Image 1 (cartoon, rainbow, N blue to C red):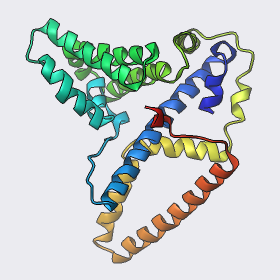
Image 2 (image 1 turned 180 degrees about the vertical axis):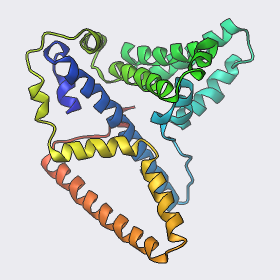
Image 3 (image 1 turned 120 degrees about the horizontal axis):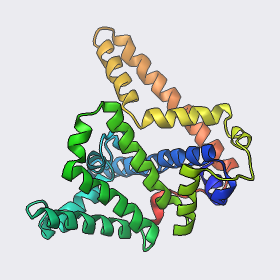
Image 4 (image 1 turned 90 degrees about the vertical axis):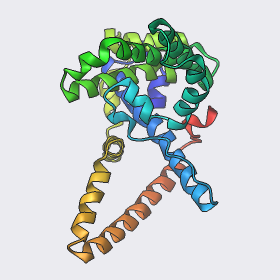
Length: 267
């Protein structure tokens, strides 16, 4: 769905379609990268290596600062230790701290690719980190939790437009469609074709899996298993059957689909 929406001219698609596309991509890029990071950790353990966790539920963040403590932790840690700290970190004047943050996120953008889109994506995050450091965090702390959460997800999703679009012109056109609408050549009815039962199921699982929903369920089952031993055995049976079912679905999708490499493989 995401590839289809972004392959079209932003002027062709309705505002609703554009928003569904960028929300879909926000979920897609997280599960793509977090998924194969987990596979790398698991394969590493099989070979005797212990790799650190790379993601800690980043979409639960309530600020951009929190997001970067949870997203691509190995990259942000590397930039902090080998660029931000040598530049002086936070132990400088306010103007110097501001400059240090912009330098780090300018380089973070370039790390993903030599493109203005990635540079702008990095500078968007850098700008909001600067704003949070110099007053926005105090303002957010006085608001409700869901407001903070919405703010973080909104900034993250909007920045993804520059991350996903093919070039700067396409990104700006997509932003225009998101906020100003367009005169689409396809109607909203077009997107309903994607909303089959399996698509809705995958979308729901993608949203739930980006939260601690399954972790909470697992903890509650483990507590129940302390009282009733059969619950633990039932859990293992259900998990095993679930994995077999998901494996069948995945193989089926790979067979009927086209070549679909990892999104982050090109970085």
